[in-house]
Image (tube, rainbow, N blue to C red; front, side, top):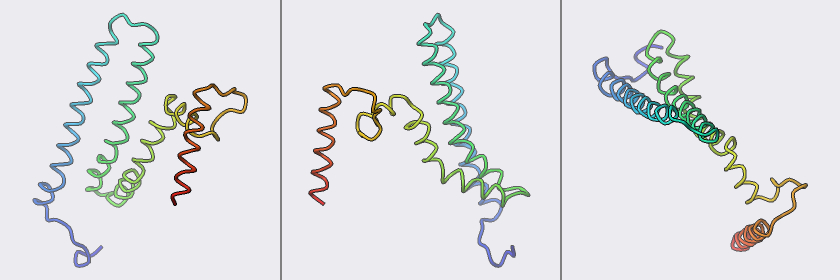
Length: 154
C-alpha cells in the first residue's frame, strides 16, 4: 500500500505509543501468571484430597485458558509488525473480537455451576425426567412472574 494513502506512526513514536505498553502489559501479565502458578503448585504439593486435587487442576486449566485467550491476542498484535503483518492483523482482529465469546464459553457454558444455574432459571433447559423440587418450582414461579411482569410493562 502506498504511504500516501495510509496514516501510521513513525518508527520512534510507534515504539513508545504502541509497542512499549503492549510489551509491558504482556510481561506484567506473565509475571502475575507465574506467581499464581507457583502458589497453586505449592498448595498442590501438600497432601491434598482427590477433590482438592481436582479443584486445583480445574483452576490450572482456567488460568492457562485465560492466558491463552487474553495473551495470544496481543501477541498477534506484536507479530503484526513484521513481514506477515496483514495475516497477524487479521488474526488479531478475529481473536480480539472473539474474546468475549471465548470467555462466555469457558466460564458460562463449560462450568457445571453455571449450567446448573441456567437449568434452574430457564425451564427449557430442564430434563423432562427430573422431578421438580419445591425450591425449583418456587424459582420457576418467580422467574415466570418476573418474565410476565417484564412483558406486561413493555
